Amino acid sequence: MAALADLPDSVLLEIFSYLPVRDRIRISRVCHHWKRLVDDRWLWRHVDLTLYTMRPKVMWHLLRRYMASRLHSLRMGGYLFSGSQAPQLSPALLRALGDKCPNLKRLCLHVADLSSVPITSLPSTLQTLELHSCEISMAWLLREQDPRVLPLLECLVLDRVPAFRDEHLQGLPRFRALRSLVLGGTYRVTETGLDASLQELSYLQRLEVLGCTLPADSTLRAISRHLRGVRKVRLTVGGLSPQGLALLEGMPALESLCLQGPLITPEMPTPTQIISSCLTMPKLRVLELQGLGWEGQEAEQILCRGLPHCVVIVRPSPKESMDWWM
Image (cartoon, rainbow, N blue to C red):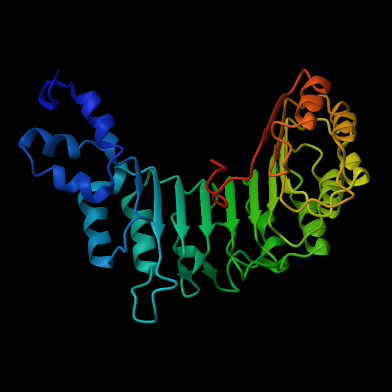
């Protein structure tokens, strides 16, 4: 049986990549060979710090010693529920990410208080920004913000961001590169606000509206009016009717449709009605049904037979709210 010392560097790097950051640093003390491997740029392309209560001093050390220009994606946790004395993500730290990590494309912030952090502090290189259970100030994302902020932003995920409302949504069209928008639990967004915003976001290719208070029919109505080029739609089925689903009929570019439970109503379309609407979508190739209780049932068989040109996925709801989407 081969020992670790006999494995090629490429295999060791692959093994090390599955280790938490703290353990990566610890194994660098084993020998000079492993220290050299831990310093390899490849190992620090994607970093997840959400496992730790990361003090600013430690974060600054990681930034200077290991990440820098190597970093492509970063997940960080904040201290929103840790009390008023807990350290917070600072504008200086976020600006340093932009200065020292010119290749950073994806930033995911979890449980962070960003109410005193201006959006101008975020790295301008970001293509994907995810906010999970974060607090933001009213000034974030508003239309009046500097249009040069986040000029490359293509994907925005807002998962349980309680302050997010219509005014923020209506400010998103200033991100001209934006193609993917995910709204999860943004309960302050109204039907009127969504409709008005999508009118100016007609270039979106992907929209997901999950766990919000918006009826599915009103969301589909706004999509059918303004997002004729959308390629992927995912939404919670609360308030979905056959008439609402029929609004998507004939959508010319729609390739993937996901209907997610568990809010099933008596008006929920039957499998036959779903098939009827899907057959009018010329490019539809994936139909996904989550949390509707149809897995292994006759409904699943009916859908698979009725849509032979599509990949039909019927499964339970995901255990975690929004980490599945990537």
